Length: 185
Image (cartoon, rainbow, N blue to C red; front, side):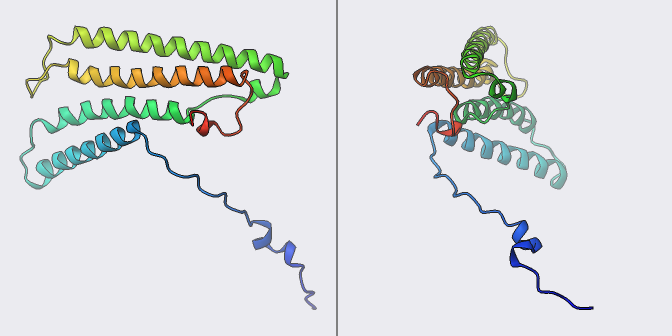
């Protein structure tokens, strides 16, 4: 049995070779820093709860409640970051299959629906924050409006980013973006 030398282009390593793209530069904005800090505070509170409950056998009372509220804050701040980076889930297959004029109209309609939805979120968050002023947290004597204030701030950040996206898309005539993460730069 003879073995003929294989062409190097046909080897499995050559077939599966993929060039990595250069990593984009990291640009941190205030909402990134806030979400990062809130996340690590949440991690610290959760670790304190775990340590006190399972190691010391005496749970710190406020950790579960504060951890839950910090998770709410991290969620809404994270949603604003996702909105800014344009990394939210979107089904663009139908829009991409349409003729350019129809695709522009669909992108405009999607921007209007998104803006309307975020305005509605801000309105509900504002009303909820106002109504919760009289209610107190269970363990700590602080108004629940502080918790819902984080929701309101996150929704306001999303509204700010929705308006930015609308302006940016309008300037482009609702043409597709090659790199959606750079839409606000």
